[in-house]
Image (cartoon, rainbow, N blue to C red; front, side):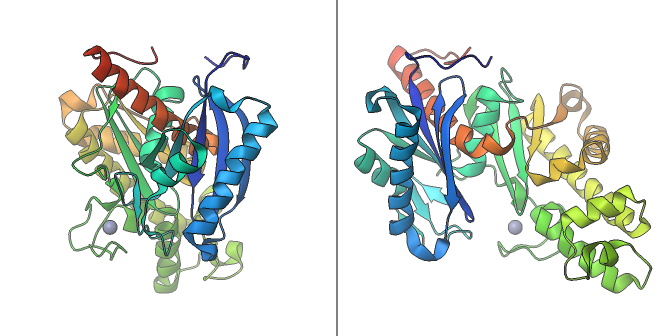
Length: 341
Ligand SMILES: [Zn+2]
């Protein structure tokens, strides 16, 4: 599907606002990144300074690509939730971003429409338009890194819910009365299977087990154990690492069985740092999820890795614009059809 970028292409600005880094890219309507810029977020600078920095990056990236401003259709922005109607509402990774009208800011500063979406929803749209979910009208996307985010595409459209915060799959309860989660609930999927929870569980198990394990030695100390250390220990057949991983894939697999039962997707696409575990992840999680989901739903479902890699933030943000254009077209024509066949 990727082709050479031509002078007549219409373009979209994709803006990814993360807790540690900012990324801006100029993206074609077929998902090709023409130019991009990245810089650390420096959260302590606060929203006004950071947003101004992002607008400068938008102009820099456009100048770098050597394209006219008039060829850019709109700006798509991905940012950690919660969000509501283009306004960022105190995400845990962006302290001080309380009721910040981000979409309006970009629209005003750049003189074009700007659309804001939860970063996991944006990534789901990215995978749907340009990645592993291309042509798959019903799919669920999960990003499993420091935290767990989700996005649901049903009948080719992003499922937003009543106020745009749907698909918090990381906060689906998988263990009744289980581990504490930062959201205030207990037993959330994120409290077991996110990268930081994996590391925390591994540290606790090492301290509690009193059993020899390679984990502290590989990391340098118990405190330094991370999800990457767990992967190294698994490769060296460490029994404690194996127990932790076994529990993780069981919890994740049963959580995904519920996701399949809820949404009846063709694909569940997993992205984020956890896909570095490769078949150690996909083999057991696929087997457990498809065994436990109801038969008619399991027989059409599969669990696969995301395809967009490091550019997912930028490409996902750009895909938010495509989803909006699709909606506008549907309303204008009074029809339902795929904007990007
Ligand atoms: Zn939670």
